[in-house]
Image 1 (tube, rainbow, N blue to C red):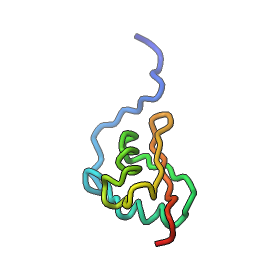
Image 2: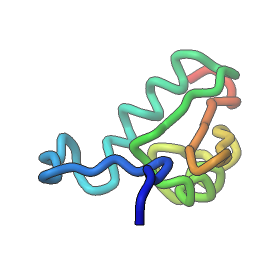
Image 3: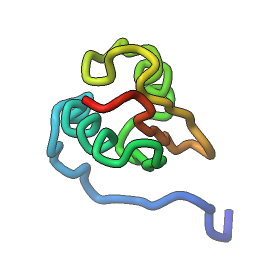
Image 4: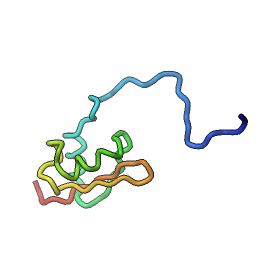
Length: 85
């Protein structure tokens, strides 16, 4: 086969984890609360995590409904929409 493959970047080794396997959700939630209503791109989290953010399954995003989250083109976006804390 010849030609380049789009959207593929080869790496020699995996980088070390800077956070736990699920990321630092308390810090992420705090950052989102600091700019209510603004969408933030969360490229280090799986797009499928959007449901856990919206529903408050992860305790950092409680109470349920205070955060919105969605995935677009394989990237997770979230924002804080709740009241002042």
